[in-house]
Length: 309
Image 1 (cartoon, one colour):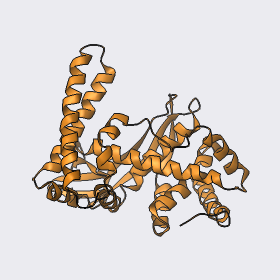
Image 2 (cartoon, rainbow, N blue to C red):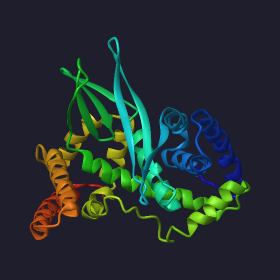
Image 3 (cartoon, one colour):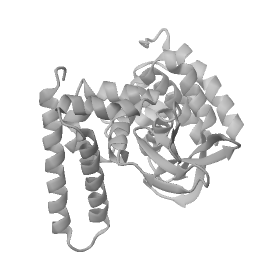
Image 4 (cartoon, rainbow, N blue to C red):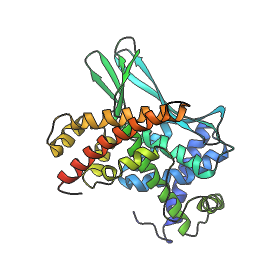
């Protein structure tokens, strides 16, 4: 859908009503309600009007909680608890954000968009059954539990790649939000929010601080015209079991996708260790550089072998 001055207010007003209903349902404070005024229609534009009902269902099903923890960088998490009713399994879904009153508007929006994007990319084919395990899907990654006891078993290695792709999409969704300010907006609450937001977003587009090093290393992959649209489409629909073979076929080697995710996850762990370490930082930097070189080499091989880049 292309927004124009003639249709923008009608489009946004439609979702004002929907967000008001959701906010009343969960008793959201005005600050959360106001950012949802722009976040929900931006999701609709990003994923397409044909997925409108699906997006609205997600915002209806996933409640936002505000924790008592204060953090100027906000930080938020998408959470689920696995439940069992007879032979049926389901999840309770919610997003927790730290007390955000000391943070900037753009950081708060970034956190909420990022976590809801995980939620949007997790509802289709959310629960997967495998042998004696139940797997809950979060985009590309899965968390497995014992089928009978529901005890946690392990997480898969696609977490880092999931976060990289999710952060890239978050930036695009926020760019859609900032594009609303090009128009004359009738609603004063919306107009004031967009006016304040535009002073925090550079003209060249929004760049999230999340996973900045990993995004830099994977830039060619995330922007590859074969990889990104295909993987994000399968991730959105929940058909992640097809992804490894598609990646491996391009490379021409089995387990290439598995190797990429293993390297990214190892690199991610090293980056966390580096940020928390006071000693042996040079050793950690060298390990990060080594993993990074392997990741870049694998991505370049994929990129070279792609017919459509």
